[in-house]
Image (cartoon, rainbow, N blue to C red; front, top):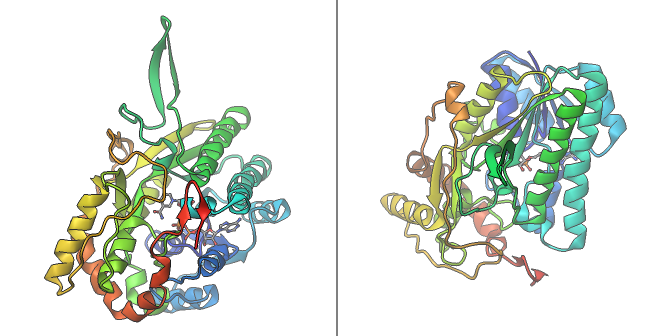
Length: 390
Ligand SMILES: NC(=O)c1ccc[n+]([C@@H]2O[C@H](COP(=O)([O-])OP(=O)(O)OC[C@H]3O[C@@H](n4cnc5c(N)ncnc54)[C@H](O)[C@@H]3O)[C@@H](O)[C@H]2O)c1
């Protein structure tokens, strides 16, 4: 199987590229423009775990596992580049991670909102057109987010629901209610992919992914040159990762507002296993399929308490300090999500938040000084109403 991983330098893209080449012997073609590295630097921060250049990563991977990863540097916003790589490799599967993944980044100002839209929506459109021309049979696995649904006061199905309205019934896309301009780009992508499947017969799995946490996978743990990035700043650090980084340097754990915001989560190693499962169970020609990808539902206060308790067992002393919520979001709400499709395809979760926090803290402790160095970027300065404030 020939798999193209778009966004292969990222938090998820690098470990997935290694997993597919190592465990499954797939031919892997990674693609990236290294923009995540630049954007984290723009925020003023850096990965807590030091990461190597792509050349060094690929060399170290080959040395350790005896397998190759092909890499193409380029930008999905450039249609000629996208056309060139799809035509050259004609992949069986395309895993599309290559977007700006940050809600706060998209809320800084008009320029960052537009940049996030241009990057995510246009990049995906370029890809859809190139697939139509040169690899219409390929399975597009696209990373969306559970944030596309927002927090409705009813159950959240997997993409579609049956509705009866004025005496007639239909199965329709479940309403999307994004909470940031970033999340909105994912909604636009979903609509564009659904249309491309309908009019051109492409096949796609649109993953509504929960928040991913974790410091390692089987392959990244083998050699320090193979680690994946781990961000903890206000824009690119997701909540469990950020709380673990805070705990390690004795910074208070900072739930936003009341902290009762409830979300879906999954460990990075389970994320890899979910995507492999989806790869082995492709949709039919013309099918647009939505899968909710999460393994646990928790609220932010529960997570802070877990990090606090496990941190104490390791001799850390994290305190919890709720701070003003920079976002505009419900702080108390109903949340009941379906996530059955992955189970039906054979996926079983291996990890929980409880199992993972201990080793995450242990992995981060040796990098305490790096976290200290950038700690001023943890507390949010980007606010949904006012934008960036100093
Ligand atoms: N990490 C999470 O918790 C999470 C949760 C839900 C959804 N997602 C989605 O999963 C995907 C991967 O997330 P991640 O955490 O690995 O993000 P990431 O930023 O680490 O990875 C994305 C990679 O794509 C690259 N990229 C971005 N725009 C590009 C472009 N125009 N051309 C070429 N390369 C480009 C970046 O340089 C980066 O290496 C994203 O689409 C994100 O929105 C992530």
